[in-house]
Image 1 (cartoon, rainbow, N blue to C red):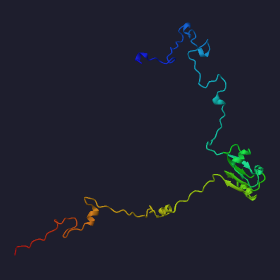
Image 2: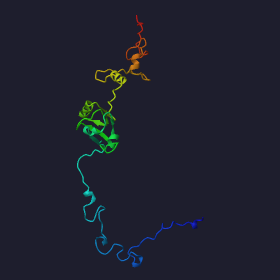
Image 3: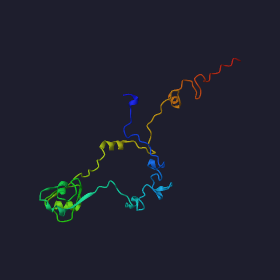
Image 4: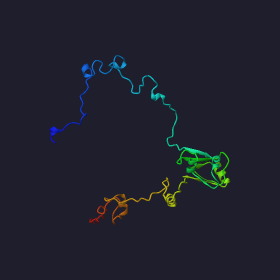
Length: 219
């Protein structure tokens, strides 16, 4: 294949439509705008959401004020009176509740309430249960088991408590254990630590010490 053999795909290159260039061009006279009216004018423009005069969608949609929690957890409520259909000694979990039509789905979170008569000898497995419902089920010889029960917060380790108690206080009466380091060129700390040579006087070096005066040679 040579360069002159290359061809564009069929339909990819089309002649541009030239409006208002005569009837033979297909878009002459009114140039596709029709006769008269708002759309035929040169300054015609409408909002994007304009629907011909009827109430726009943005205004038809109801809007409620307030805060909407998107992370809210919804529970399917089941009362104790609805559990009378299960045999005594059976296990009632979300799967069996969904088969019985008491909750919409086996994956629904279930909360047990105490309305109605109490069933006898059931093992109820739900996500949440009220205190009255738990007492009623246990009084009739059954048990209530919570699914995904909240775990208590872990206590801090003993080593952490000891380290916290042993940490030095930073109050105004606390003393610092840092020691001054002697500098390379000497300083107040080095001068205080180095003993003075014999014969030296405060503020003078060893060569600047006062010499004894000679005896007077006159008679």
